[in-house]
Length: 347
Image 1 (cartoon, one colour):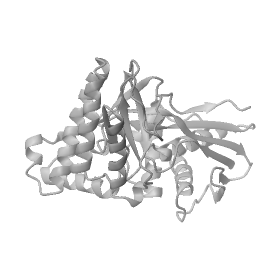
Image 2 (cartoon, one colour):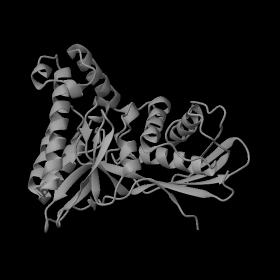
Image 3 (tube, helix red, strand yellow):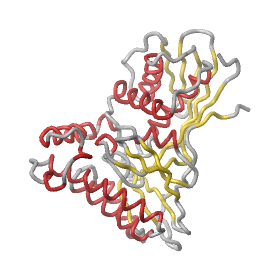
Image 4 (tube, helix red, strand yellow):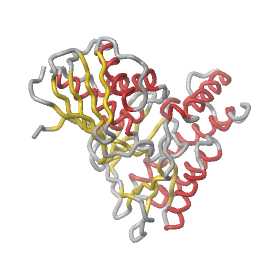
């Protein structure tokens, strides 16, 4: 067990394109961002976790042997990670955790995955244990979110946070879990994010319902995943299953087209793909809201080449692509692709 305090940082992420495809065995193109969550852990010598979220001034405490499921919010994530690490028979030790974050909660930038990954890395380092490989760690964190928080997410957020690379997006194939870097050479173009002002929580939104609808569509089509769906057959499904399947099929195609656009530096095409993705998420997947539409409209009126809702939808943020010389609207922030989760040197 580490005698000195340890610290771990995990970034949030933005998903350029490929929304609601991860849990359907499809494709996505996220990148890690500079903002994230830092967890500092100090050994206490016991078998209890004492956690404090400094940004909100809240505390939690639980026994490692039997974390209770009566917590919500950030507490449920921390307890879930500890429980899943224990279930995987990874070493754990009593600890005092201090949690701080720079990625806004509920903005569609995956503060939840950043928290999960940072807590896992800090607890493992404190116990003197090497973390499992990145894909295994992502699965462990996803189970914590599924089982302890109630958001039935896929692996997109965790993989992006763990495998993030500077100046690159990640083409992730969620069937094979193959991860391929895609260089982001923008030549003066900028990715920006604009908060709609509407917070979302996936466990309490229509996210789980959308996932269940996709499962029903697969059952009706006799396939294991919508990755296997044929475009012509999806239209024969009853509504809203047909619309959900049609979005996923077309979104996978847009991911491949975005990879090509980025590699050929056709940024105007990249903007058009953002617009097409948003229209599909609004009209077929039905995850937009009036606040999100207002944010999209602000970016477009400012001259964005394309804009779309990101994350699970039902609020959160909107991603825009700005050409050189185009001024971002008030409140928009530029996004810079950064490295993935890592341990930090203590001062």
